[in-house]
Structures are given as C-alpha cells and as structure tokens.
Image 1 (cartoon, one colour):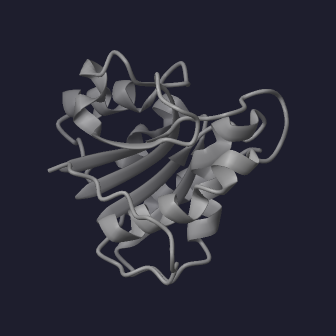
Image 2: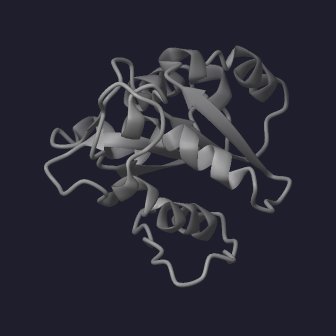
Length: 177
C-alpha cells in the first residue's frame, strides 16, 4: 500500500495532535498501528486531531511529526512480554529502552532524534506499543490482537481527553508526563 499522498497531505495541514499508526500490514500483527488508525477514522474526533497511517515510512515521517504539540504513536513492539500486551512509553525514552523496540529498521526513535536535531520535535510523544502474536506474511491481525483493538482505541481516546463509546473494555491509562 502506497501512503505517499496521505503523508504529503499531513505535511500541508498540521494539527496540534497527531495519532500515528506505524507498521507493515503485510506482516499480520506488525500492522497493528495502521489497523488502529482505520478503526479511529470511524470515531468522532475533535478538529485538532489528525490521524495518519505511517505504514513503514520511517524517516519520511519527519515532516509529519515536527512542530506538533503531541504525537501518539501506535506500533508493534518487540518485548519480552505476552502477545497482546499493551505498553505505554514516553516517546523520548524509547531510545533508552533496550528491552523494547520497534520492529522497523528506521523507527520512531530515530525520526524523533532527527526532529530534535532540527529543533522542531513535538512537545510530547506517547508511544503505545503492542506485542504481536503473529508477524508471518499475511494480511489481517490475529484474533489475539483483534481482541485488544477496543482497549487500544479506548486508550488513545483517553489520551486525547475523549470519553470513548466503547463499553466494557479496559483502557490502559498511560502514566507518561
């Protein structure tokens, strides 16, 4: 999937908050970030929020994240936890999290470092990581990760200060400044 147009559109109109889904939809659960973005597009969001399927763009996302008040990143993470575990991190601390890292070659931590170097880094970055169950070739997330989608969406909505209409699902309140 070529998301070049979506990325270019994001560079034109910068809203205060960017919710960025990262991942490769051709590797099942690795595509959890873009999957969450597609679900969030069905939600009623305030005009200061922009949703972006960043795919596997890596450093090409630099212009999209720069000069934002807040960026919320959703991505699959490689961590020594059970599949489906949802974890929140301060995006700027990811570089020092040697036990947890993105499954992409040029991940968000490198892109954030470039933005800092250019003095245009977002004020706050929250990373919501999900441990994948299946990253084999194929389209669609596993049943284990699909069961976590409502909780991930509710977590994002909570971070945006929006009361979600999703009932009966746990929200993972991120304890990040």
